[in-house]
Each structure stands twice: as C-alpha cells, then as structure tokens.
Image (cartoon, rainbow, N blue to C red; front, side, top):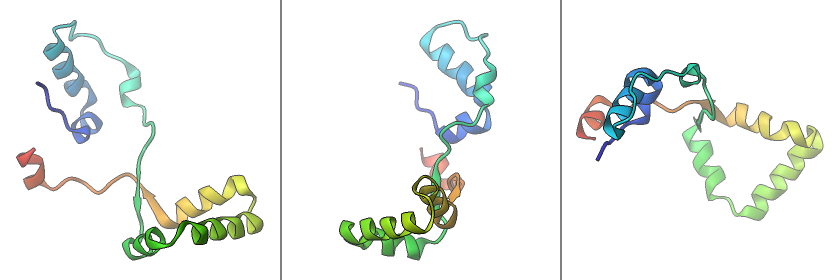
Length: 102
C-alpha cells in the first residue's frame, strides 16, 4: 500500500509521481507539464466565526440571503462575490507533527 499526502503532490509533483510509478511498476521516467498546473484549488474559511454562523442557519434563510444577493449583484457574480468575501484560496499548511504521524 502506498500512502501519499496531497501536500507532497502539491509541493513536489515530480518526485511524488515517480514514487507512484515505481509503486505501480510502470515507467517512472514519464514527466508531464500538467503536473505543475493548478486546478480545483480548494477554499478555506476566511472568518471561522462567520462560517460557523452561516453553517448553523436553516437552509431557507440561506436561500433567502442568496436570492437577496442575486438581486443586488447579477446571479452569476453572486457566488464569486460571496467566495471572495468569505473564503481564501488554499488550505492552511499541515502541522509537522500531524504530517509525521501520517
């Protein structure tokens, strides 16, 4: 069994993929420029308290807030505005003791 951390894939994709290829017993000399492209970057809450308050709201309240926001800003931009205000790109770095435990 091969266990990998997404942090390793992000910080050193080439070395991580070589480990995967060697584990699978396939050609480990293959390289791809796409390993270095950022895709589907996650979001983490910018304000933990606000995130908890929003998460605890009943869905009809959240739906009403979304509709209000959509009236102010065009619907296709509403999600982007909310994401920019409430979230930041990426996740906090993993602590060394947790990394070592894994």
